[in-house]
Length: 203
Image 1 (cartoon, rainbow, N blue to C red):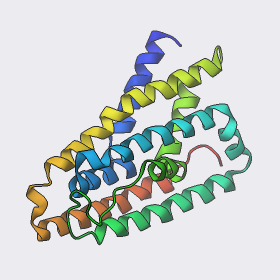
Image 2 (image 1 turned 60 degrees about the horizontal axis):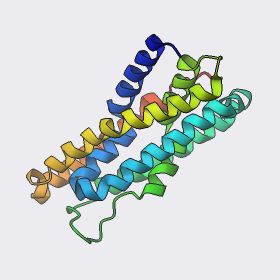
Image 3 (image 1 turned 135 degrees about the vertical axis):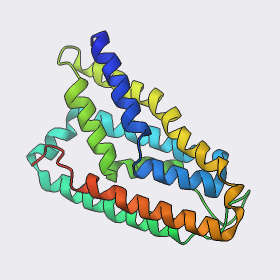
């Protein structure tokens, strides 16, 4: 991988990681409702899950989707339905989670598993592998790309959690919190539209 390709990959990883999408909308809401510390497992789960998706695409799963595009369609629909359920959970949340409250942030395993049905994660992984992976030293390059995304992704998504956490004091008013959670749920649903109808190149 040349230096030019490497720098372009860093830019691609940052812009795709930091821009709004299902993960970042959920992290922003989690930062508000549960704070930074309780959201850390969610952040790490995104890291682990996306790395596994990226490696899977790099080592052949993308070819499976090209051969059987219906499998990818089913995955997108499943991801969409799961996101709708998460949006409903956010919309109906009415109090800030504090300490050992009844509210529960997403666990590491749940966040990692979600990446496998997250349309944006698949689009990012496919874009990274098809655009930035030279044939020479292919296996090494796939691993390098996965490691680079892990390094860039964590601070990128962390921005959303910290922003949400900073809003906690403002949103202790139940009315404002309700409005915020309804807005986050709506944005999460809206974020589905371009992802579910985006052509990832499997048709």
